[in-house]
Picture 1: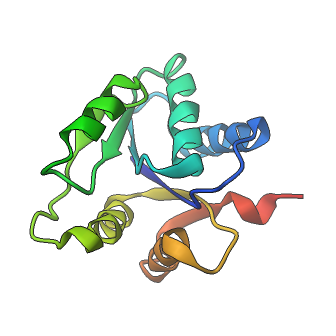
Picture 2: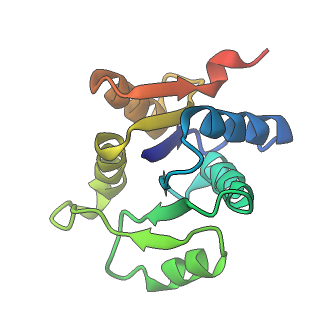
Length: 152
């Protein structure tokens, strides 16, 4: 199973939201099988999800996290920092090598949606890249859980 995450970069990093992410992961995975987590690595929501997955890996070593990088060339310093953060098990560059630099993140996000079995989202606003990816996931009829809809 592949699980990806979509969320606003300025999402509040709360323990309640991290717990909701972990609960959703556990509700939708077979904890005995390998689960792959595709993470974008930018902004608060991505960071919160990476931390949530990292904590779950203590109990479920078959959970494997991937930082999906939108850039390959001239990006080595940031990739090194991301790798050294210890939040990701692997770095993956999707097949978007012919994509112009300014469209790379959007193309990477579409790749993540396309290959995912489940998408956990925190989309509250009707603008920005998170919303665009959310609409794309809905259009593709992906299994989609928007945690922002369950907030009190």
